[in-house]
Amino acid sequence: DKLKKKWLNIQEGPKVFESHGNPIFTHKYTADPAALVIDNTLWLYTGHDFEGGQKGYKMKDWCVFSTTDMQTWTEHPVPLKITDFSWAKSGDAYAGHVAERNGKYYWYISTNWSGIGVAVSDKPEGPFKDALGKPLLTNDDCFASTHSWACIDPAIFIDNDGQPWIFWGNGQCYYAKLKDNMVEVDGTIKQINFESFEFTEAPWIHKRKDKYYLTYATGFPEKIAYAMADSVEGPYVYKGILNEIAGNSNTNHQAIIDFKGESYFIYHNGGIQTDGGSFSRSICIDKLEYNDDGTIKPIVMTTK
Ligand code: FUB
Image (cartoon, rainbow, N blue to C red):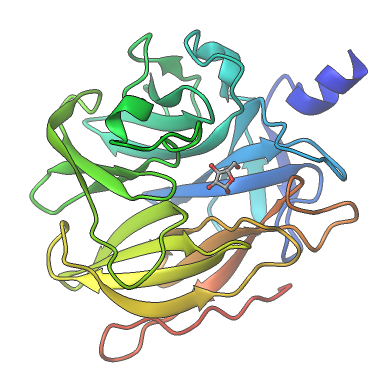
């Protein structure tokens, strides 16, 4: 019971606290960030690692935090747990992504065995409910992939024409259109053609000045690389490494957002907190800057 309480970090209402630089949260281990800006508020959705020297992932729920200044943060009560998805057999609460559409918030989540699901809420802080009662995507949607974690790491991108897209995968990067209802795939599932560069996982798509950016984890231990294209479907041209291996975590996982006139790179790091590591990770945020030609400057990881 003691362990369970630690895991779920059960709390009744929102908690407000100050962040003093990277890692931005020190009261619990957080990983796999996804971020959403609504008006003046940054919403940060994270995975939740069990603490201290684990030998594997132990992730049973997800967390949501909000801020208007990146210093004072509100942690909202646990909005979503792996057990909220009855079909997510014995899986862990892997990376997710939240998108807003027509006043509703859709939280796409992944698990290592059962694939990708989607939960919905009327509010960015939740509570969220499984929208389908079954997975949105499974390993069967990942072509010939055989490993149990092939169908993970959903990333949603809504283009200027209103078309929502979902990207995901481990080892291969898959993508498809979503229907306007956000809970059904529209048409065929395709693969990004990575000819000369290695995709591990953690895709994230963003757009700036008509250019599409696909950032993703490459290699293992992972670094974050990026590629650029003129269309959401590519072809994507490899542009290099954006973020080096972050601390002593084998994985890295990024979210890229603009907030109050600046661009930010949100990622996780295993190296800062006592007991931190590949399975006890911590979210960090650093500035992201573009060159005049639209390429991105390498991220400088700081403790600020
Ligand atoms: O947190 C579990 C998995 O590790 C995520 O789904 C991957 O992106 C990697 O960060």
